[in-house]
Image (cartoon, rainbow, N blue to C red; front, side, top):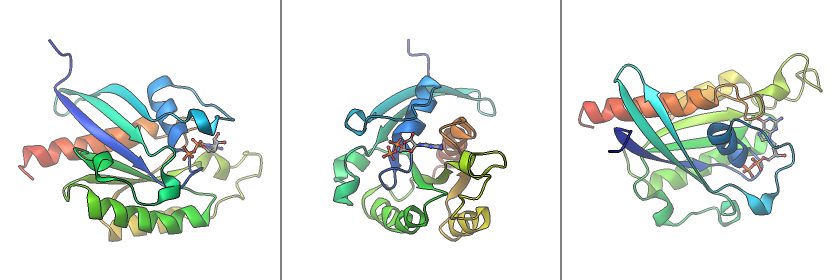
Amino acid sequence: MANWDYVLKFIICGDAGVGKSSLLVRLTDQRFLANPDPTLGVEFGSKLIHIPEEDKTVKLQCWDTAGTESFRSITRSYYRGAAGCLLMYDVTSRASFTNARSWLADVREHADPNLTCILVANKIDLCEEGSPAGGKQRAVSTDEGQNWANEESLLFVEASAKSGKNVDVAFFEASRDILDKAKRGI
Ligand code: GDP
């Protein structure tokens, strides 16, 4: 018998370099590669998580858009069946935050309208006091990220694939929202 209650498909979108592969490696393998080989980008990862409120175990199946960023629009097959989306930007890159708008437009155009989307502001380790640049690398403030997420009805979290901060939380929050919607019949 399967040792999970639900299987949830997640897609991870965002510009090249924001840390999508790194987030997936962190989630599934609890490690960080400082110099990942782009040609070996992880495209798929799977992990079991437990949602205590529901007493349910969820199997996450996560797909990275590895290699597709340059096409900007992704084929429908990639979005098919996705229950959740991690829309990522890099807090040290203004352009990646600006481009998150067109990623969201793409998701909204092709994915299920009820898809749960969480905006993930990655690389916050570079903004912390004591980081190599003394926390001066931030290009997008927490408020800006949060405000845009609110406007677009997205969940929001600041995370770091490098330190692992909030990586599990991002998937956990999104999964909880998906199960909650399912319970309410949305
Ligand atoms: P992708 O193209 O979106 O899949 O991005 P990658 O996962 O290949 O990461 C791009 C670069 O950013 C790599 O050099 C990573 O080591 C680095 N990187 C990814 N996540 C983080 C993070 O949270 N903090 C820092 N400091 N660097 C990161």
